[in-house]
Structures are given as structure tokens and as C-alpha cells.
Image 1 (cartoon, rainbow, N blue to C red):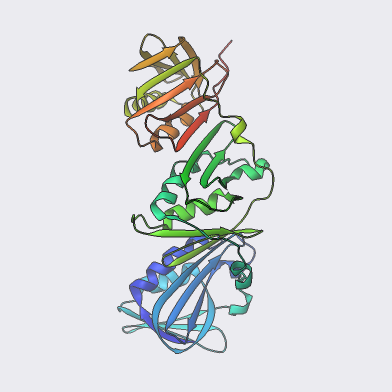
Image 2: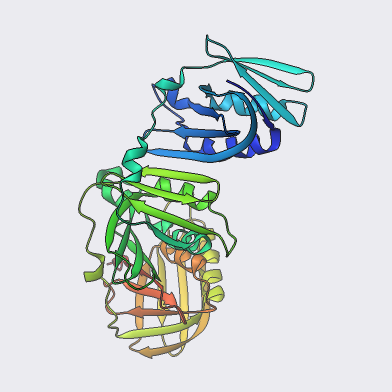
Length: 373
């Protein structure tokens, strides 16, 4: 392989694909980035940790000799970053050494054979019945407004991912960790085929970081039997799917209520954030919420002190005293974009529904804590 490419473009591609490089592995090849140079003047980069693969579609290059090599991702990224010139020349030899030159700098890196790098067969990715397309910024928002509810408990592996379900021309994304549910939907064009898959939270987090935010940008995605594939301008992300039965979230949501509250989102968020200042280290601090006469009062107590805060609101229905883990309320309130939120309650042990005043596309369920005896 023998090529010359722009240093800045190569750096940006390396930063992107490095998100899929395995951090702790017994397989050194998974700590590498695969470089492949083509005769048509294109350099592609790929990284894989077995469950997640990120490919950069192309870096323009002057390719004098096509070929491929796997290089230690961390080392190669540092080498490119430190090179002094604006262009980088890369040449490999028969012993899988890569010589990198830029300006007066010349560094040699020991590589590994490209055929040892795990590559997903293209025929597996091309054999799909339907590709779905949404605005990139919309999918980015859908992930942002749900991802925090993905479970971290590996004993419930299916809940460490998000359900992406397409039914009746609606894309729904759902995350559940047994204490709360985050739900977001977006309407798709008429005639969109139904589909369902559970995508690991890690993959969606990385996807959200690299998706472009521009409104005119689009991302296409599709599901195979074992993988989810997302393609946008300049990259492709391929993730293994989680296998199992996802919780029937649609049977949990309930619009009935005995108490409803309309309150300013920023004011309520501020009250919760002030209350958790008293939390000791990472221990959960129960918050008591009293709803009475168009007023919502939050109180909490710990070894560090006690707090009482209040927020005016509009109420309908019965007065209520209920306890929550404030983390779940705070994370939901932070991703709601509306100025006012609607809270709906039934009993002191029933989940509370949270959603924006004008938003029909997302909602959150939070399970309360059992009142102290």
C-alpha cells in the first residue's frame, strides 16, 4: 500500500472510527484500525470490538499502490496527530510495517495482516428488504430523550438496549430499566413496513455522538437478522442486536389519573437539583413531593442537612404525598424541551407519567418509592 492523504481529514476519520476500538480485549487485532486504499483514490478506515463496527466511508487520497493493513489505533492516531506536515504519506512493506511520513518526520509502525481483521460480509448487509430514512437531527434527539433509561444491570441483558419498533408508520424508541420508562415516537411516511429490533445502548450512544446535527442531513437504517446498520454521510455504524423478549411497555402506560399537575419545567428541575445537593456521595436521597392547593413542595433530609423547596403549579384532582428517587425525575426533566410539563399520578405506589405540555411524541414513567413506615 502506498498513498498520500490530507492529515486533517485522516485525523477526523481516526477520531470517529476509534469509538469502536476495543478497550479491554485478549485479541490484539481488535485494538487496531483497518486501513484500506483503493485504486479509485479512496482510503477507508474501520474499527470493530466484535459487537460494534464503525466504517468511515472515504478519505480522499492519492493512491499509488492499493492495499490494506491493520494498525494499533491508539498509536497510529498519536503518530498522525504529532506529524508536522499538512499531508501524510503511508507506505507498507511485506512484513506489515507502515512507514508514515510528513514534512521531515518519518515513523515506522509495526502492523498486522489485514485478513485477520473481523470484517462483516457485504452480502449480509446488502440482503435487506427495506431501508428506513429519518432526519439525522431527529434520530439524534430520539436517542437523547431516551438513552438514559437503558438498564446497566447485565443480568437483564435485553434491557441494556433500546427497542426500536416501527408499526403503523410510526417509529418508537423505548428504554426501560425496571424503575422507569422513556418513550419517544416519530411519524414515518405512509406504507412504511413494520419492523422491530433491540439495539444495545452503547451502540446508540456512539451513534448519537457521531450523527450530524444539521437539519438537512438524513440517516438511513435497516435491520438484518442479527444486526442494526446505520448509514449517514461519511460513515456506517453496524451493531449486533440483543436477543430476547422486550417488556410490553404499551401495557404499562396509563393515561388515567387521580392527580394532575402542570408546572414550569425549569423551576421543578431546579428544585430537584437543589435537593440532591444534600445527597451523601452516591447514595440515593429520597425526595418527598407534596401536592396541595396549586403548590408543589419538595422536601428531603440526609446526614448533611435538610431542604424544603416549593414550586407553584396548576393542580387537578386529589392532594397527594409521594416519594421518588430524584435522579429519575431530573434526567427526564433535562431532556424535555417544552417550558411546562404535565405530571399525572394515581396512587402513592403507581408510576407517575411525565411529559411536555405540548409534546405528543415523548413521555416518561417513573416508579415511586415506598413511603417510609
